[in-house]
Length: 423
Length: 148
Image (cartoon, rainbow over all chains, first blue to last red; front, side, top):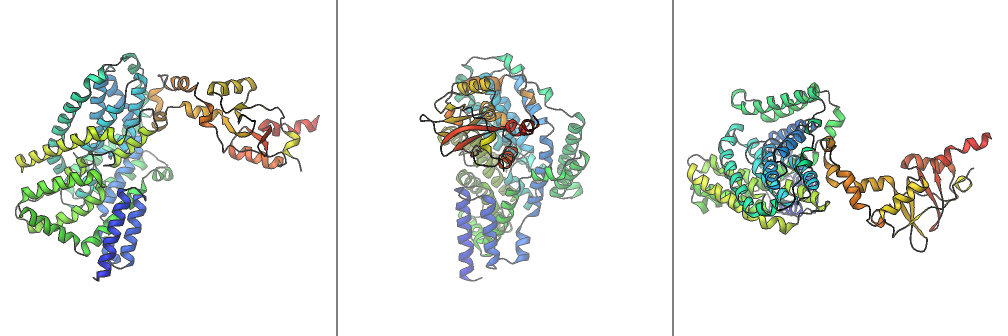
């Protein structure tokens, strides 16, 4: 490895990281061009590059996208949202609670961006018909999309990456992350109640309008709905049962997606064109760039220094990774961050004595929840805020920050305490 | 070769860019037009406003992002929103890229443009001056005239 090659990797890494975080260039283009440069200068060979790309992660993302693309057509999500809204009787605070909880549950099983794309426009429809301010509900939904996403292996890209590259099971994520996710959700709602309750229920309520929402129109084709839901539930069962059959999650998701297309007779061209290809290429490129960092020794260096800093104490290392992840992903994109830290943790694990599993939970919870800190902290936030700009109620950077940053810090303190008690 | 100038409708119907949405719709109703040319204070042509431009503006943004809007069918969201924008200035959504033809363009060119742009009428403009419009029916009725 020549000094020149080391320089190439560092420049590529810093430039792509900056380009992605400042949103100057599209993620996918930045990462793929970066990877191309690293390969061109032979920092990593062709074979090594393929080895660095974690196809489990990419396959799982692709498979879930395929399944969700078909599922969206069933009207299930609209049905759930409208059913929930009707339970509230038009009380704005209850609408906030119900929509936040639905967002959390949906984003535990779908990716956060999809969840937000489904829930946020419906939220605006509801608040518009009731003539109330959607901003508190919008902020809460963003928070809960990231909180809910932390609960499962497929809920949030950092978790998919961690699941893909470690030996943690689907059920492990639920066992370890779900309890604290529930606590964080409850505390977040409690704090939001203090902030918003009085403000929200002050307006005029028109419960009659809420009842005009007709959830029964959402599901137009019953058999299509049943087939899709069945395949989805089988896929989830397949994830849970992974220890028994050892078929990779990526295979289950991709297989499930294509079986679903077969069973429900989807148009191949149309369905595949709805897949979001840019994030898949973004991940691929990123894995190669992080591979380059590994090759030039940066990962080893980081791992060594974290261990020196924490004196090899696993609890302390976990706390360090948790806070580092939360604070970093508040400002930088959580995906390249997670890709880097996964390599760092892999390097640290053999050097530490004891059960190192907690390090993965620290990375997962830190990276997922950290995204809540600012409006640019996670993809779902950016999408939701972007959407709101086109409406009469735009969500601004500061409006979001004032509420969300303190709540994010509270959630990380809760995780900190949870680690101390549990591990 | 047949030219637009021979077959166009020479009535000049237009609204001023300071008009409201309401005024634009009134002109459309009165003259049975799907699109109305817009001129500035000194009468120069600046663009068109079509029915679809107004309908697009009348749709709340969130409606456009909901995949399955059937659940909202029983609520007057779009109707109410149209009511809210009716007094907005028309200048907000003048389509400056609306296709136009010149009087010396051929009928084939104009017919092709009507077909491709999926518009029902094209303003006929020379320089900045609006001199009439050429509609689908202006084109389609050409053989009828010949038969007489």
